[in-house]
Length: 394
Image (cartoon, rainbow, N blue to C red; front, side, top):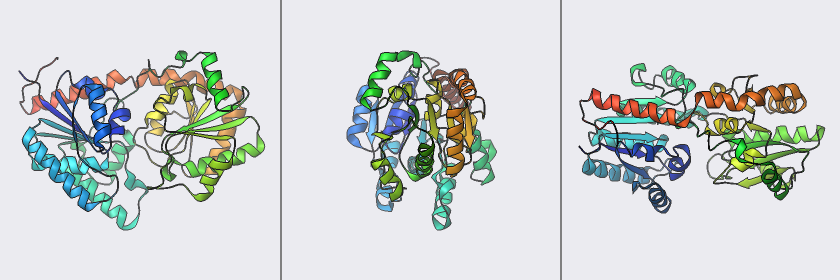
């Protein structure tokens, strides 16, 4: 009996590579999996490295009616031809295009994972448009998976979808964490010293690290302001920024960009394929984002033994328990962020307590394989519900 066809769609391939790392190859043992995304060359590279079928479709993260219409038509034709059993989308643009195309092509099981909502920071007509798009996505889906309790509650509150259509997989998260891969024991003292030396970091420096896109709604403007003021009071501090600087959507303020460029205690290393060495040399994660789904980096930092300072938003305030494995601050509040960064630095007893809990709380709740198995169980349950035959093993 051939395995059912499963198609996974994301707007850009980095979501397949990072946010869903390892998940599609795991599902390949049970389904005939196809990955759809933009950026033909990068998608083909991903397919080759993971032994997966891929199908490139040009999609953008902006509102681009002409490109979006072409993408919708291409997706519809492909789904009509392939006749998959399940289409599962991630990210807002892939969600609306993928779910609408799957609905038109009469795909029986149409699933969408919500891992963050840009509309939370939108206002006026843009917010109205994004609300309408989100509602249409959920209407076309047969099931919607918010990846955090906060998102689940927000979707219910906004009446985007009925509760019966919503479900959180496992404890939350889209992919969990490979805690064997994110393990501080993999990095010995001499390896860490070499990287610190390369980056101009002295042995006495306390390093706050941020990992993610350098954009406004990640709280970078507030983080830079907080660090700058803190540096006036305390020596031997560094701020390590790991992630791409994006200038098209939600760019940083000119003041922030100048500070990053001119402040020698702020080290920006750009996008890194492997963030573990940078986490290994750091003491605490500073992640003052405005909105998230269920942020991988907070789990990754925790698995590497780092306490986290996060904003009080959904996802972040589920991974971090205030006073247990990190500290929680109000979003968009540079002053509160500065005070908390100072607290975690000066209160040695508090820091030791947070650090001792950081890894074990992640290991106990967000093991990657458990998330994969929970999603596989959900797929198999939905297949049974539709009376569709499937294999229980590869």
